[in-house]
Amino acid sequence: MIRFKCWLLVLSALLVCGAGCSNTNSNVSAKFTKDSETRVYEVFGMDCPGCHGGLEKLVKKIPAIKHAEANWQKKRLVVSVREGAELSDEDIYDAIRRANFTVGKRIN
Image 1: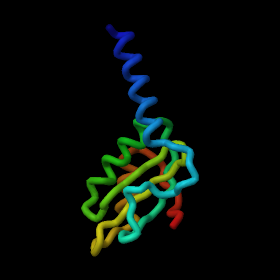
Image 2: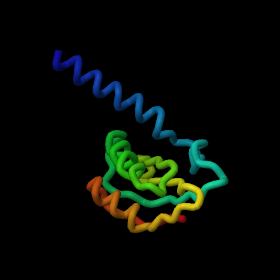
Image 3: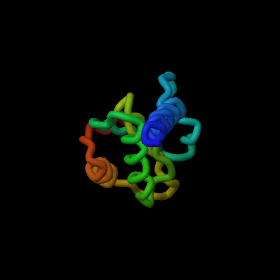
């Protein structure tokens, strides 16, 4: 039973990675629209799909965030700011630190 659970966990991780960690040249997901401000941040210390999932969850709790997408392979976090909302970079940096990752620079 334990081996089955381990294999199920590995399979789940591979499926998540396949869906969320593409190596395409696209910098922004289709979920990000031209109508909202998009920001990209470097994040160091993410080693697996579970890592970026946890970071996305924390960042999405910030009221000014419309959408967030992290990628552990590219070491990036892309966020979309809600229209009319103000977002401080420090809010994002704080979420990255709370997720136990190292803050890089804001790319754009």
